[in-house]
Length: 415
Ligand SMILES: [Zn+2]
Image 1 (tube, rainbow, N blue to C red):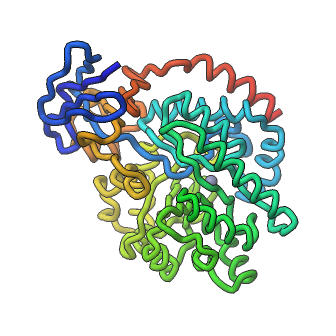
Image 2 (cartoon, rainbow, N blue to C red):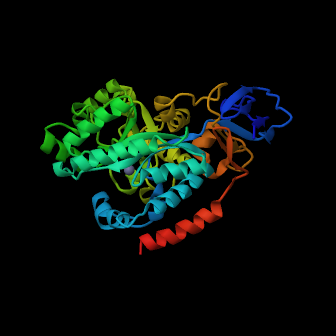
Image 3 (cartoon, rainbow, N blue to C red):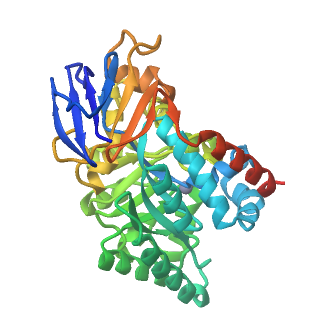
């Protein structure tokens, strides 16, 4: 099936039509002529743009939505999430991720960076749903050197298994955090990421205690520790970064690692606020994520981007901070940092969304400002990834079946 979109407009408000061939964009411009066999989508009253990139999530946590709300991070992990996760099967993770993918397709996300148990089930779900995913199995040794060999085995096993998937899936390594993975294991993982040229996805400097503990244990702050073990590189994805100081931000910028901010999760768990103004001044590459839905509680990046902008304005006591175009670029930016071909250009992957411009909240304002401040994910009408139509007119295949599966599994896991 070849898709052509005619009569849409771009983010700049100018006419923009597009035609796919296979999984790539064959033609794009103000007026594109569809072939007679094309499936033609009428883009009138729609804005066409690249999909959003969710830079940090644990997709299958849809199974634990609202389970253990309103607890502090460590309490929540120890009393609710870790015991429930102990019961998880690979099939649970598959179905939880399928539901997450439906949520993401419905809110315009085309790629997510995931860290979770049973990584191959995550990859299988993303592939079946048609969404791009950079997938890592969670790796931790509980700071116990006797578990390091086991960590190395599971890292290698998961990289090999994830490498068997198709184009939509990128294997990566997911050391959980510096307080759950020992220094020798971090060193080994950094080397393995470099050898295999894969991303390393890690939680960093999420809560204040992590910094104090790191300084007490290692004599340096978290980003410096990551640099010492060789993990700060252009393929490093650092989730949160709420407590990074000026020296750490300068170091991260120099190493071209990406910090992914998760404002809803940070607010909900009262973890802290990402120092955006300082990070932007230092030139730190940035992305936006939702974190798992247990701490959000959804995967809607259009809600997240608004929150991001508002939180940073409030933190800076300056409404001119993080204006809509800058915030939107960050919601789409991680992909251009770590992957090629995100712009709507001939030869790039045919990944795009259509957002309705005939809704009450999106019918009359500035296109970009409406997206960031007025709309939420329900304004997304159509999602196409790799030339495949995943949603049109807000309908996604298999939605009912996936919801039924997840309801049963969530009830079992949280009972
Ligand atoms: Zn997380």
